[in-house]
Amino acid sequence: MPRDISQEIKSLLDDNKIDDLKRFLAKRKCLNSCNMGLLYLFHTIQSAGILTTTIAAGYDMKELVWVGVGLNIIASLINIFEHNNNSISKRLLRDINAIRNDTYVDEDLMVEPEKDIIQGNNDPTHISTSNNINSNNINSNNINSNNINSNKNVSVI
Image (cartoon, rainbow, N blue to C red; front, side):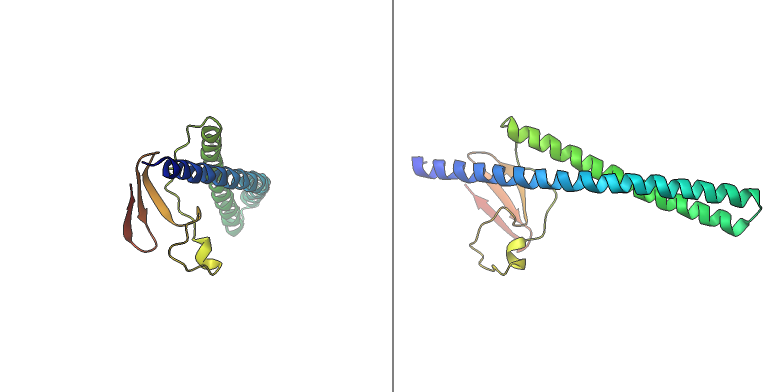
């Protein structure tokens, strides 16, 4: 492979790593601030549900017991969202550390909406890191990609 092409490929992959790092840091910041709100909301709704159920049971108000149970169910759902955000945040931190240690391989299964089409760029030759591409195998010699939007197999060697 000519020297210019290999350097250009390395440059593209390095730019992709930098774009991924910026995106991962922004997502972690958003997840952390969202989780703080979810945590406070969870404890508030759970406490209200426990208090409502206790008062309703003490005064033998069967309908109000179900309101308390409903509040506890809502609190449990909020807790599930918080735990999901925490697991995503941990995965992002692992990827950030891998980028820092130069061991990062973009094998993510999560796909984001194609921002170029939303922004009006319908040129099929336009390449961006925000395209919906599910990468199967990426290394310095072999790139195999499956383009999800057009359902065409793309192989670049």
